[in-house]
Length: 248
Image (cartoon, rainbow, N blue to C red; front, top):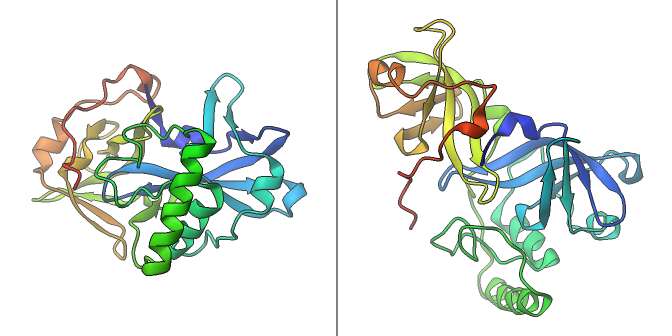
């Protein structure tokens, strides 16, 4: 089922033993277009520290009470590697984070996640195997560099540039709540078509200019305007797109 990324904000995060905090932001992968982490602002018990929660840890959503249930304890989260969420997260920090929790690294995989389409946590024995393999790989060559992680809160509001003219801005993203894959960008076309919102598949996004706060799409302004309309009150009724980026 498709969900709005905006609806994740302020959802309460629960661990196995207590409430952890609330979702402040999300990091998504602008190469494979999938949500990688929830940025959670911990409550007073962790001195307002911000922590990353991976979809690997999410057990279920409770949309009625606006809560996300995880399989992490407060003790696990408190001892997790400290990551400055105000700065880009490097591959080195991600590797440290994944080793701590025993999650497989997703970047060598050809799918959204290391175990396929769904970030389901595997049995402890398999986690230990992955952790040992990753530690050996890291000792040989520590990954560094740009990991394509972007803040959804930051990107929402970026200008949309068609190949012939500007046509609005990014209003939201729609992701599938099982795979966490982003299937659509919601475009507010008020600069050209007042009051209209349309859906654009990420496959049409050819470039994102972070300095100019612009998203470039390989479509004409007319094509964008004629894209599927979006009703923000019924995002779950939209069918996930079947045409996706080729992952390699």
